[in-house]
Length: 295
Image (cartoon, rainbow, N blue to C red):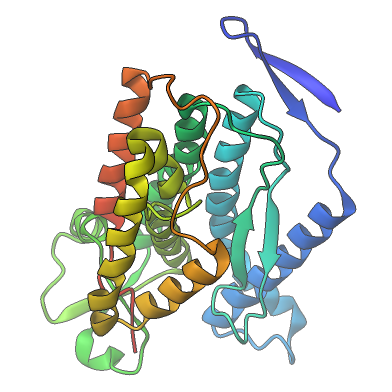
């Protein structure tokens, strides 16, 4: 394992582990599956013209950059706090079943996170890093998205808007009429997925990124925050069934809404980390979408 010294102040060593065959294979499969998804969005017929898969590059590159930056944000801060963590595992998905061609990515923490400072910074780094990449992706993608009359888009999949999405649409298309809407370019769609992933990860439940942040900031009160958040998914399910599905998945995967305890909880957070926690809450509000998908 190679090491690169990146900070004399903190004497941080960034470890570059050997890429395993499993990591490489999963990443390669995810590249292929997201390429297929992006090409299908562009109307490509992969069977009759296999080379048309190149039409999927804008979507695939943008989405994998957002997801990869998110996970490497976690990885970098894990290394900074001397927490053993794996490289990101990318999870491919059949594009004919799952629209975007991937179930996302994750890293596995292999050693204990000992204090609140490390827990908050590792948890917050991913959403913030992914969010930073998603914003310019959306601006570029929205700029090159086509404007259509809403009456001509009745059969299209309608994506919900967050506060941030509304602001970016206004910024990129200030003259858009009430009777008009955007047919998102694949780059913009990947950016929208990035905001959705950021929002879901910031839910203050269990060992989601938001759960790490909430536990680091509020300790045992996190389990009450998690229960309130999970209960809030019930009325949201009447607005969009997406929330019911995600709530069930969260309970199934997390097994518990509570965050496991850490060793040195009594070590207080720095003011900088507290502000980072509040910034993550603001990002969640900006990215929140009441009804993500409308059919």
